[in-house]
Image (tube, rainbow, N blue to C red; front, side, top):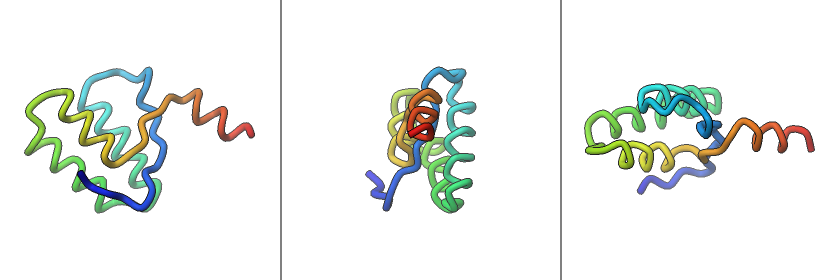
Length: 78
């Protein structure tokens, strides 16, 4: 498992569950947080190593903290 300094929060819960959609959202989140190399690495790992949807989700979770829009909005409120 990849250890990052701090995984950015990424609102994937409630989104279209297509893995390419989720991968794109996670990639954008990483890039917005100055983690371009990690975004490329994540996509490469998913497209070359993941043998199932669950494995792909596990790889995404190595890079971002999967959350919902509501959780992020609640944190921004306080």
